[in-house]
Amino acid sequence: MLTQSKGDKIEQPARILIVDDEQVLCKTLSLHLSRQGYHTQQANTLSQARELLVMQSGSTESGSTETRQQWVDLILCDWKLGEESGLDLIREVKAMECKRGRLRPRILFMSAHASHQIASKAIDLGADDYIAKPFEISELIFRVERILERDLLERRVLELESNLGYEAEDRLDRMIGRADSMKRIFQLIRRVAPTQSKLLIQGESGTGKELVARAVHQLGLNPHGPFIAVNCAAIPEALVESELFGHSKGAFTHAHTDRVGLIEAASGGTLFLDEIGELSLNIQSKLLRLLQESELRRVGENASIKVKVRVVAATLKDLQVEVGAKRFREDLYYRLNVIPVHLPALRERREDLPLLLNHFMLNISEKIYQGSSKRITSPQRVRLSSQALEVLLDYDWPGNVRELENCVEYALTLVEGDTIHISDLPLRIRSTYSEKKMVDDRELQNLSQSIGRDGLSIKKHTQDLEKRLIVEALKKSTGIKTQAAKSLEISTKTLLYKMRHYNID
Image (cartoon, rainbow, N blue to C red):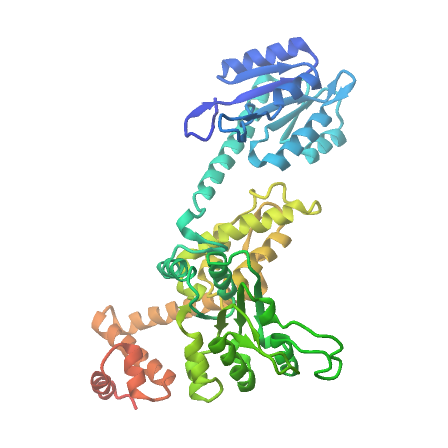
């Protein structure tokens, strides 16, 4: 006899509802199943079955509404129920699944008259198995146990998957992270947001720079004020000044009316300037005046306008390098870089990968599931195979979190069935994994040959590895020994000694 978990980790006997218009058969099946330890209940009509299957919502003492879990785990449903059809009950139970996920009962469809087409239709509608009358009780019990065993396994997998979810401290606004680097950023944002200090967010593309800016806005002093995000790299250079600062009627050709700029539109809220390193020096000087005087001047006007706006800037460039190359104003850099925030690349916080994968799998599959054309039977049923998970964990994610989200959406859109395999992943990820595996196999082969040639001497193999690392460091530093020594985490003097020892030119 199989038992079902009811969420509190106490195993209870599975509950079975028998729906058949033959009362004698109902009582017979109930007797045999009860002897197996199952709890049974009987219904001779669809209306009786509906009453027993109602998902009741009751008000608690606090006034909130909560849904009690479906009491039945399995339905034995006959096809002909007088003038009614058991297929209608299957449709209704299927609708319950769409609404409540895994809480819907499993269905074993029974009939003495159904053709193969009817049986197939029942399965397509949502039945889990089919048995033709007359049947042996032993065969029925075998099918019941098989359905309940599969159901129990799926419930336990769902419980395990839910444990991958994030706690409150793992999330800030729309950002998710459990790595120490992300926790430090969350802490910094919580402390800085209630102030008016300016932030400069730096990080690779796809790391979530705009999410940081939005979190600062939401936790700031004016969360209900406007949040205006501007991609400075996407605005044509000739239009940047007009877009940011606005213009008056007649200021230039096609300026037929006065126009409020994006900076003025953000007054009372937050202005997020993404890719600020792409602005020209001319626009940088005008932006500096905004930060110093809290005022701007529209194109074609002489009068200045006072604005109260919090500026958060972001860039993937190293602005210190840009300042040194005279492409970015030094005074503007220090005005913006009051609170520096560096977002780590996804490859630098790999411990967050399972957390992010679980988050995107649930959220994106829910969106796809709500589109009726998708084949997914439930948004919580699609999962990653162990091989696909290994590929994703091994990938370096140059596009960071954005690339991970796109990868999950790609796989969920194209997957056949309820398991994502390696073949369902984007080609670039599969090919990168294949190339890396070939390199690993080649290195393993070289190591085997080396062992065969030099034996198992740790000293010999350590020296070979040390020599290769030194050569690689010198290549990357283009021969600059101080840089090579720094990357090797040794002194320049030690590096020179080892170069002579290994006869490295």
